[in-house]
Length: 392
Image (tube, rainbow, N blue to C red; front, top):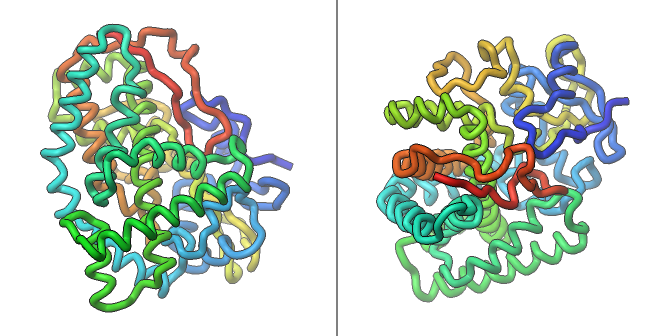
């Protein structure tokens, strides 16, 4: 039987085994951590699994399942809920995590990026784009958005490294990190109730206290989700995007000469540059067809978004990186349906400013080492660089 996760090198933008399976059908049978699962591969199959209410996240998160990381199975996470509970909690969090609150961060993100790039110059060549840009930017932004003390960044980064682990950290150590983050957030919530500010935690507390619609566990858990997922994925994807542009210098040159292409370039990078292979599994609650395959009640389906983003039925020449690409299909990097990433707008904003300013100020930016020699982290649920030395 096929074994998932695939043995794909961390530096690879694509899942060759996934594409091989996709050429044979929309879904494939596999074993994941010893559990039988269905892999949803084709673009329409992945979008169906992510939007069809007959595929349950709640059922997948309760009890035993193929995901080894306990941080992915917290029943109080938005990502572990089905409607109507998911609808209620997401509405509460989305009200505080509004586009207006994100957009007002733009001048601040711009200032942070400018300061970090000044630091790059001060450091001199070669400079590590991970340590000097990709790591500090998202954690500084999420701390400001949430109202988290900036001096707590080092500890938050340590927790984040454990909570996105797959095999790199023992489950007991991940569970301990979850407990520590929750204790930290409980204290922070209590402090914000006493002394509110204009950041997201205080806004969410105010909205919640007015209607008393979130439990204490739901409030803490979803603040943890925003704090950790709200920055760790952007740290990794920013580095991945830079590597993709390094691998396609013609596209980097085009972006430099035509900055109006930046928004489209960010979406093409999100489609093309693999951050993770799959999103969290679902369990079928009744018989449902995916393409020509019948999924029976109780069977687990894993949606492979990285493969869907390379489906030739959805994207013309899907293995070609092209920042001028237009429609018709939106990528699945942020998911689809009710669990579409709540932080998508913030991630796009950070990537747009960081990448745009990086190539505007350093149009001759280039890797200082062979790209095949880059050092990638192992044992994580996401694809992430340790360092990215660069010259300009």
